[in-house]
Image 1 (cartoon, rainbow, N blue to C red):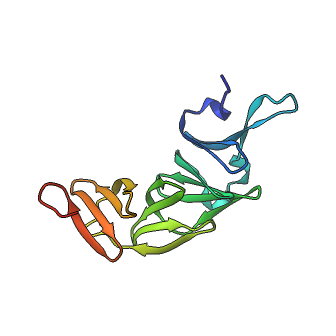
Image 2 (tube, rainbow, N blue to C red):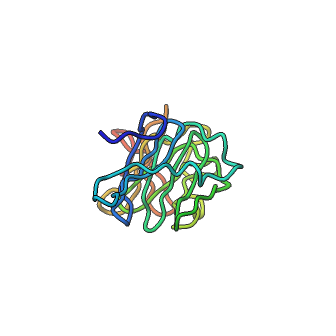
Length: 169
């Protein structure tokens, strides 16, 4: 057993491009890296969190994306890259790994993390204020979003369609 700082409950883990396990936890974020004897040890990244992102609260998700790691709290996004941590200005309602991509549900729509920040928003019909609960990509490249209380929506380029027995695919 490898303890997390403050005996925090870990909510999510991922593996970054340096083969380290990155950890999202209760009021904590960090990574597992080998010590001098090649044993994995937990290192808290809390000291790197900028003052404007405090108090941190629960870190609910972590997504490795190239050389960056995105941590999501209940409403904020933090990016860890090159041993620095920065707060993104956008408010996040959810975040998802879809293949090698990281997508973030924001008030302005669904946005893809581009390695440093969030790209342009992709509008999905009738999502605000309902959050996106899950996101997946079909083999043909279309995105499928599960929208709380609304159902499933398929995004095909600039066109959206309901998904299910009464919708089209």
